[in-house]
Amino acid sequence: MNKKEIVRKGYNKVAGSLEEIFGIDKKGEDQIKFLSEFSSRIPLNSRVLDAGCGSGAYSRILSENFEVTGVDISENQIKLAKKNAPKAQLICQDMTTLSFPDDYFNGILSFYAIIHIPREEHYQLLKNFYRILKINGIVLLTFHCTDDPESYVEDFFGPGIKMFWSGFDKASYLKMVQDAGFKIIWSRLVLESPKWGETYHLFVMAEKL
Image 1: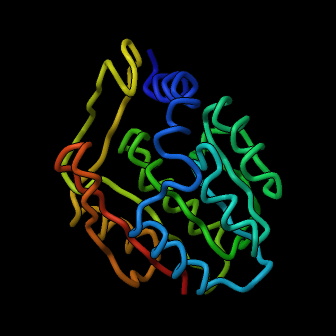
Image 2 (image 1 turned 30 degrees about the vertical axis):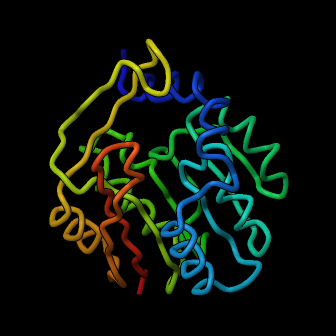
């Protein structure tokens, strides 16, 4: 099965159960703090892209102050997002195929989504983010922090539910973000909840100058 099809089908199957575990009011302190800083750097009522919006938790928060477009590859996640974030424009699409005009968004958020895209597509994705972002626009992105060409599980929040991940190490991503044209504002390694194991993710905030 195609890697992206694994992700799409997997998130379609777990959409409801993930809503209970990672619901709209159950986001981690680090993520909410990062989101607050991201929002503070963007003009009110401007355009923001939530790339890999899932069930719409962040789109809902952002849409209180911005004109939000949420994109996700999973049809069932988009259905949930339409309930959770009714003010946002929500699109079911692969984020690597976005064709918005140049200089369109003031901010781009992507939490825990790039990690499910084959890593050979990550640089072009960042280049496209740069293209559709306005000057002085901000990105806030989640990456892997260890070298992982591809990995799978067969029981992603349920028996027989397959999921795919792919990514590079921290140094590679920091260089990739800069090579795509961005100036890095900060990067942070965040430890996930202990019940999910000793897993870290890399968060990067950067600006298009």
